Image (cartoon, rainbow over all chains, first blue to last red; front, side, top):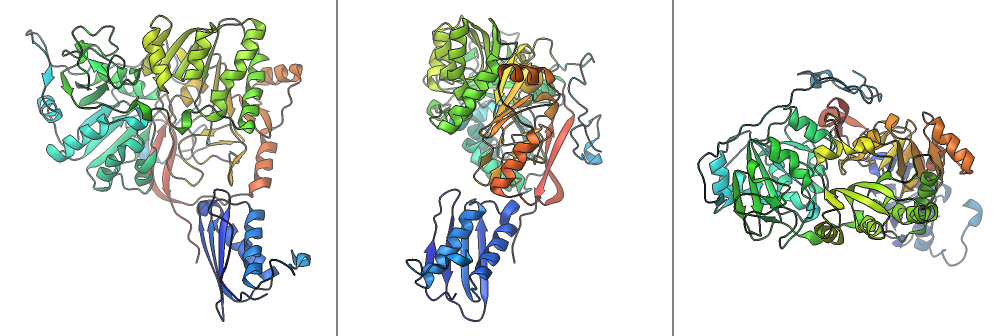
Length: 98
Length: 520
């Protein structure tokens, strides 16, 4: 799946995460900011990497501003941002890879 | 050296007879020398003790580099006096190396955080370290480690001479010109002023700061003119509207109400729940709500509370007005209705000092006559150790207050807290910092179940008999981690930024400087 346009999912409410994705060619970069960085920062990055790998996202810029979201929330926000970026959020959601 | 709660205490802190914590009741029966403060002799009759400015009062008491000053925190976030006094000493009198020994510090004292950053305030001894002060101390900007004491540990340390206060600044809602001072009878009332009791008795100099001068003699006066050097009037000593914060609210949250109901049910099914029982509750959402469910049990069983202790809120005053509470022994008024109630009912709503409340060294601390205490927690671990001083991220942002004192003194200490807060597991493997040792904590009530400390088989039997379900604390911890994931261990630098003293003066834990996680 390719990040074709800028897209956003999630909020900055407590226990949520806001995920923004931007097209970028040649590499995949992930930035994480979190209110629980000291305890979960590494896990958040790993979750992002795994979720993006599952969706076969190979390039793009992903910015996560986490406010203590549970892992399931985080995954859902990342997936949604990616789907929105390539126009697949209203139909064609690849449920089988989720 | 490892202490009784498994914490490694650096040897360099174990000087001048400082010991590591070795369990509860360790100093019982020993002797302790109380120190006497210096006092200026007041033989010659004086018309009054009024001084025009805070600066002049400080000069008359004598200021010097490295001096120690003290404050009470009864105005909580609405306190003006501490900032005013520190600013006078620093800006007008150029004092450096200032030590501050307060009952608590919070968001009203951001100016002190500035002076810590500038290296002017170099020592902090307090119960609470909330707001920016907690952050700058956590960043390692205070020259010496902060000393965190409970409300009982503080008067013990003061009386034992471990803290020598050069000047105590006592913000008082009303005072006469001789220094008979109180927290009621003024334009900005704090209610109780008992946090300042030990300071008045043991400081070398005492300055009463008030915004309402009343005719002599202002009696009854919790702060006695005998102990007061000077009286200064200012425009406002504090804002009582800011005493009640989000911490002291009556919850509407059904989850918190369920926990409160479960706490009340546990209390009603243990043997200390009988006519004349004693009770204290904190001001966290679910702990405060326990009052309301306890009332039902009291009415049903025709039981009256002998005394309610500690920080008092309107919920307790209302219980007393309904005839359900004989005496309220109040260390701190948590809202305006409580302040009014104190003023209106001097016969049954009684002000006490922190010394009377919780000092482990004296022979009459009320905490030792306490049947039940209901407290909240930032974290509790599988050894029942509680943390109320550092956040799960390792930053100072809380206050032991009377938590360790009431837990140790009471017959049944119940912690009530949600299992998780956001992504933070409240029930965890090891708390970041131990403020209340696990052997003083008896029951944990969460929204996912109740656990009883295995040390209290008697309480386990009571719950079983009453058909109240309970689980192990390990299973609660696992439940929490299954919801939020297992957190990474925090990483620390060697530098100790705060020392947590047990109420007996031994070292319970240290807080080191956190090494923030950065991702590449």
